[in-house]
Image (cartoon, rainbow, N blue to C red):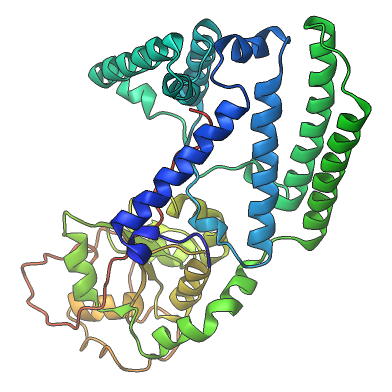
Length: 410
């Protein structure tokens, strides 16, 4: 299922050749659209030439419809597509600065390179200015670092913002784009003195718009795959990992990774709040199983050296959480073998730790009585990794995930 990591599949030389061809094709498309001309690009802001809006928004809505239809048909895993994390206020300020630069210079960074490739002098100076700005930004970002990293919202998308199904959002954006295209023609005629489109052009435009609108309506009706449907498509392969106990890691292995500076460990405690408050591993995040789906987008933006470990009193709830996270393509997900009970058996000195290949009871009751809710204040919540020398069979195999990629004309 797409997207595919080309370097592992094809090797670096062929993968880089494909990247080069894609970049060449994108630059060619921009040049053909007239984006190497600064007066044409600047005309957007004076409502005289709306080519930028028409070309870029056409690319956006066509790609959007194809992406979500591919996802709906199971051809593409949407969760593996990199979505830039949202930093709201820095993003707004940065957008205003880039917009001002676009108006003054007549280019955005990407189109300036197209102009440079066609040997336009203004494109050369704009690209040089962009590189100079990047240099000074890198030298001064330390002075406004707090603002630069403020208002973090993670992998935040319009369906999340409006609480609407993805198909409905796609339909509304396509509808908005078609209205904008109509309005752009009117603005060009009024401010730029352009003639109305010919009858044949109007018919072709209407046909293309109707096709996109129909595709978005069909997508809205068809819908996106649910977590349960995603799991059904991979259950045969993934259930074998559970049966073979390939993803259940010993408490000692988890502790070793907690103290491993090269790995970011996210202990996801999926018990209810009451159980979490009674006792939990130090640093564990309380995300009850019912709330897990809403936390998935943030998990997908974590660095690739992040290890997720689902934890419950035994393994039943943690296994359900593992299935959900695996279905949603969260990488490097494991289960604490025997759960909190086994953790306490190991580090509180209560009983013999559960054997790695034993079958757990499925009883999610906490076997250890606590007189009060101690949270992570109990010594066993943060054991000394050097105090015990426990042997275990290593299970964790860190896997790389899809990395960030560029987008837009910038």
